[in-house]
Image (cartoon, rainbow, N blue to C red; front, side):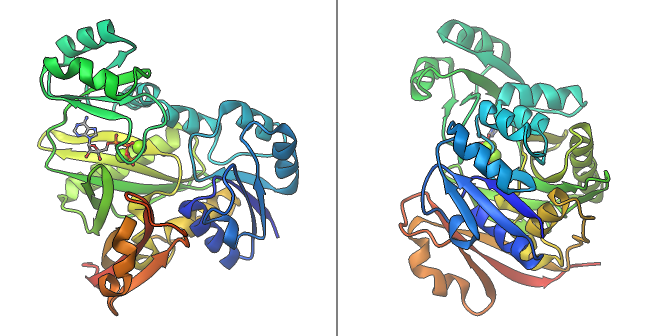
Length: 351
Ligand code: ATP
Ligand code: MG
Ligand code: MG
């Protein structure tokens, strides 16, 4: 069978590898850190730096297609891999999602609504941005942020200097604060034949900048639900995308505002493992392997709860007998670290 190369060795890579294994495919994971969650379940793994040319060449030579569970792989590594083997989803999706300014520009060019934003490089451009956008606002690093890291809130203009220091003067974006009622996400998939299939939107609740819970169905009107799915499809098609993508949305009285996109399987799509016949991981592997997409219709209402840090110590209590348990095999439970999740079925899906 085919061998799928996976860049990044975290829990998303692990769950992709498990799905691939069920489809009779092999996986080879590449990650700079040894002993991550994915390597344990893959037949082959490479531990080497992102700029190790010999290791990248050997990896690319050993696989039929490369995908990623981590979107911050350096461009030079991807150039080398791409000269040897296809990368799915393609480079454009990665480039757009690696930089918050390119991402917002891309989304606005598609006619979608984002938070108002401005580029910030120093105190002067921050002042100009603040006078245009106003407070409250959020200063975020353009690149490498996740789980709310690399962000500082600016409640009044007096917070500007402190915010810039907090993100260590990195190239940044100032975003106007979106007054949303709740957050939802759409997990969308596009096959190599251009077919698009979106999972039902989930409602996301964050704590301390980290996803805590995803609940399906999300609180959305029929027209909001349609809007959410259609805008995800528009993004997938514009990028000539192959694979699964997460699209994070703010729900506001004036419509849906796109927060960010993730060119990979997404934490807010973990509920699909127990709420759908075909989950996001199988859907992604099908797409990158060039197979037709499966039917991701939701059969159950689900609450997905992340197990963060010490939560893992109470896993049996949290899960009870009514939740499917998904653990990532991480040795050490550090604060803020995602250790696993549980999916609780809360009833059959309304039809
Ligand atoms: P992730 O782990 O999802 O990749 P991230 O570090 O990339 O997170 P964002 O998704 O940009 O961060 O922001 C984290 C959370 O902060 C959002 O889910 C939302 O709750 C809040 N937030 C971000 N941007 C805005 C905004 N412009 N207005 C209001 N709230 C925001
Ligand atoms: Mg993000
Ligand atoms: Mg986010």
